[in-house]
Amino acid sequence: MPSATLKIFLVHADAKRLRTAELSNWTGKAVAAPRSEFDALLARDEAQKSGVYFLTGSDPETGKHSVYVGEAEAIRDRLKSHLDKDFWNHIIFFISKDENLTKAHIRYLEGRLIEQARLAARSVLKNGQSSGSKLPESDREDMEIFLEKIHQLMPALGADFLVPQASGTAAMNPQEILTCEIKGRKASGAVTSNGFVVFKNSHASLEVRPSAHKYPYVVNLRQKLIDDGTLVTEGDTWIFTRDTEFPSPSSAATVIHGGTANGLTAWKNKKGRTLKELESS
Image (cartoon, rainbow, N blue to C red; front, side):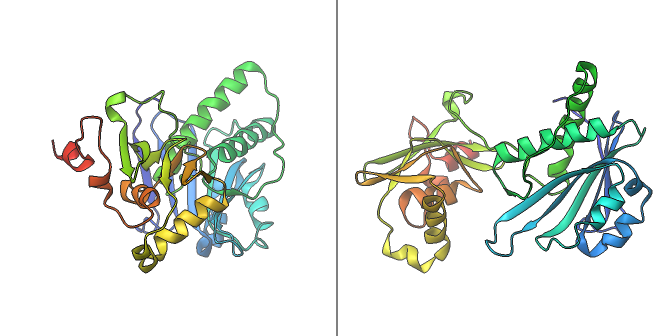
């Protein structure tokens, strides 16, 4: 993806409130706001245009981060119909400043975005089946470029549910792969831009240390991974069934150790150098 200059305008001088975002040499534009500024967002001229939108928040029953992806020929009218949904607390929508997004274009974008959000698996997707749309080859290529720009902007607006989780050792430089061992169990992983990824087939201690119960985060995180099938038992150990991303090396190490752990010293390269030593070298 080529480099770009990002321009974010804070309407109220507050990065958490109503804001717009644009990229250099791109006809698209993003508008984002918390639910508390719903009326102000709908009053903007951009809300009259066609585009795609995202409603994000936490499911009130499960507490899991959730997202709804939609499209509309008039963003303003469609968003009003979502006021009965109680899970969302933030809105982001994308339009084209040159008004060249047709109904077919936004349906195509919606379908691809739903597919990408589902594959990233960072949030619970509130959509049912995506509609999608078939486009001529040239239009399809234009919309794929539009999608790339959406991906560039979303993290800057505080949304990462489209970001693919780091996976696979094949794409990793062997020098970047680290290991974490405890009582004969061995896990491998690597630092990522979002934190740390533990690779599939890594091992973790079956037992939870008594001290871990002093820190509910450790026990709860392991239980979450067990419940969603990420960790399964094999003999006297846990096995990771998929590449799994953690917010930090330490959170990954706590799951593997079954108790609190310092990821900077628990993870080492093949020469035995700790992550802390590698970062300071």
